[in-house]
Length: 344
Image (cartoon, rainbow, N blue to C red):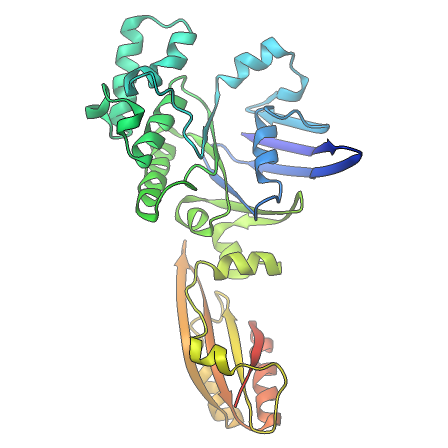
């Protein structure tokens, strides 16, 4: 449904040329929810604004539903954009219009009849759970309700694609969850293709089918959400995954932690389990085989689409050779090992 081929974008700041988006290839399948995740300034917003040519790329092709947008003139592009909806972090509602009138605006601009507008707007308000708010004004709505109005307005022209630019960033966790559930339901009921950008891994985890990680204007890795969580290939990707697994070193360990081993110090390990090792009895095996003691400080296991993965923090006690043999054993059995430091 969405194809980017060698798309790049740069900006000029004084005499400096800033490469906001490196040559980028991306494929988003019809009817899927695809997430682009990255830190602030990584190029997420530039990428999604290039998709509907709010930002025209310097080079490359953007193809949506078989139409190459980058080859269209302004009039042709205007017609195609009616099938590409977009919602934003700050809703962009018109304060002087009621909820009904905000949703009706795209239909009015398209020249639809009052009968058609009334019918369509009422259907959309029912879809987003705001049938009782038709006569309210944005000032009287919560943040979640405002975003629901924005979603209904975005759906007014029956788009094929919905672009979401940090659409839940201004919302509290509970409201974010309800908006994501709504987007997932819309995707399933309408077959709508959704491309969203976010810096929150929980958003990707909850609704996306596939995800790509962007860093310094480049897509550095992509795949199914389960693949990404179970085996992120980059350290930045692993940091995002860890942000959703609440496995932290307690304060008393943090206070004792030092980086240089001593004669009696014990390493603190962060173990990252992949789908093929998460259920293996490796802790028991190394304890027996190498005569070490492992004290589990914290652990969490997750499952996405049947793929399990997890993190564990453990304190390892044994002689130096046994400790090294244990670490080697873990690595040979596809368990990522990171020595966080040592405690006495």
